[in-house]
Length: 492
Image (cartoon, rainbow, N blue to C red):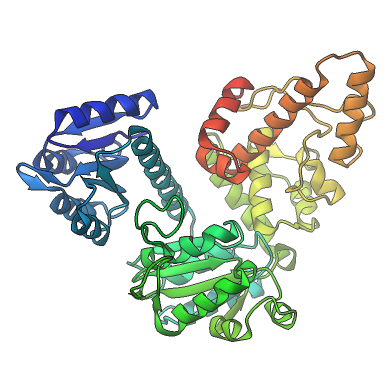
């Protein structure tokens, strides 16, 4: 990880932060004035620059706000934390107007300061993952007529700011469509901000969308900008809009109508200029009939509708997508790309793919790691492809142990002990437990828990191409937890 740059003319502040961050295994680099920071930024390579910047606001030889302005001009995505006096409200407001991630009031509580810095680091790493994905992902692929219709629609909308609704099954690539609409729009130079409304707890979603004022609720120690403000001048992608709580739909309708909203706990209207692209896998018309979705909001969002076909509706694209994902996985893992035989490809083309394109991508990454030879044969495909099961469903106790797979450790005893796999992982788990209990094993809980956790973590890492922070987020555990588990389970 790149270092955290600390800028403060007070040596004691620098010393305290350095020691606290080093205890958290976070590297640091310190400066006593803004002039040295700007000089270092001008000569630093991408790998040598800061992960985040923590700066005092008043220093001899320069202002932290001036430094913020100049840093944001060069590195708009770099999170900057401004340290300022607790009572200095003007400075706090100026910090946020200048694009600061947060401000840290002095004197600060050291554990809370470290927690804030770590949050900024995680936000920075999420942005890096997003940027890496966007850089690695080419224009959407597809020769099927249904996909050509989608491409033509994106082309027609390229110079428009109209609201778009993207529909399609989970995993079909709705966010790729949203990114393409942004990339080819007049807002391409503005931010693209995505939020999955179904993935955020109901109590937090309002604050995530609209931001909050300091003191708006317990724990709101600072003012925070929401996604609508972050996307100002660009595009906001609202994924799984059908799951938005009904009471929030009214607030969303208001901001779509006139571009104004209030932060949680705020009394002053905030103006934003955002193009909204919404997506859902649900039947919104039925949701309206059932009373779960506002009809007026539906019509406000449904100006232009783009339906993304499921992968089973574009089987002629499976071969092209498979070769693309195999090439992509090999590049990410630093290995030679594998080829797929006609027989294996034929099996894929008749598979239903309940997880759509995302599932095919996961299969290709799995094959890059697990297939024993450079040419993938039908027998090398995951069992789920043969029996029609969803690869996204947990398959913890598969009939084939992860033995000898290059790049992955052997998980001891990973196979089902008696009679092979039943095709139902829960039944296989029960069978395995009965066998171990009957055999006199005294630590069955620990044995099966280690195997379960190992497979779960390996699956998540395969899904995220080895990115631990993203894997932890998908599993719903903390970054420290996944790191500790990887070490405990011998998965390094």
